[in-house]
Image (spheres, rainbow, N blue to C red):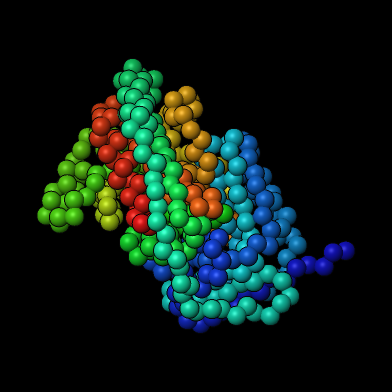
Length: 406
């Protein structure tokens, strides 16, 4: 009989600067406001794809857990062994699952460490790494911009014909750096400039998403829905007026309602009660403002074996990244978008041994490949969308990653 692998979690007793701990240029991270989880080293990793990728991911994770002998003196969400997950948008693309060898977490002013193996507790380096400055060159293709506006117009025409209500179209830009790109540098800049977003890094996919797809904690489900966007000017008075116009915009409110309803409908079968606020609030980020709604629900105690994988399978893809009706929108994306999204717009985050976890939608992100990076942006298209304005909105959504690499 193969001996079990020790997994140890112990309290560190102080709030640690998580990003300053990372010794590896390919870190694992999920954090917001200085709290969250970071990890490094790879104990085990695999990929899944196809229509059953969420169930396949659960099966692999549970098989790994069977091989662990866990000693956990901290307990609670995010402690013990952790699976970092980055699912693809489309079932046909590859999703990545990783169990880091070392994980450090911090929440509520307290920190803890988990490590896999019989070695002594890892020694933490509390000195932020010196990261080399890089210069970037970005692909510029006016023909690509025009082609994307043409796709938006095609989508508007289909919507106005009654084929669907909303579709989300994405585009990408390639950048090349003067040296190998270090994800830690990007994370540090994003954490400084976009503190209210969830920063993430998993197997080269790095970004800062404002959209929480799923938080599952002891039977409580939370999802933050964003849909409806307007750029900021940097002038507080003008931005306040713009926020008011966003909150009254029939086009943006229509787009937002589709997204909220898709999330509420997805979690309702698992819940005894759901709370959906009557109207959205305006979420202010550094470069844009979004209409936002926090949908919450209480899981039905009578339902057995409902975990993060179960709910993700129903939630993804929501109207915020696909459209509505979902099958019609997915078919139109496949027909006209003209690119593979990879893990962009897929669920990204972590899941613990209890099946709880926290996962966002991989937005405002890029996929690193040595000295190059592919960054993404997407826009929700409804009957009132204007291709020129949608192009401008997509450019605003590129800004976080462009500035993090500047």
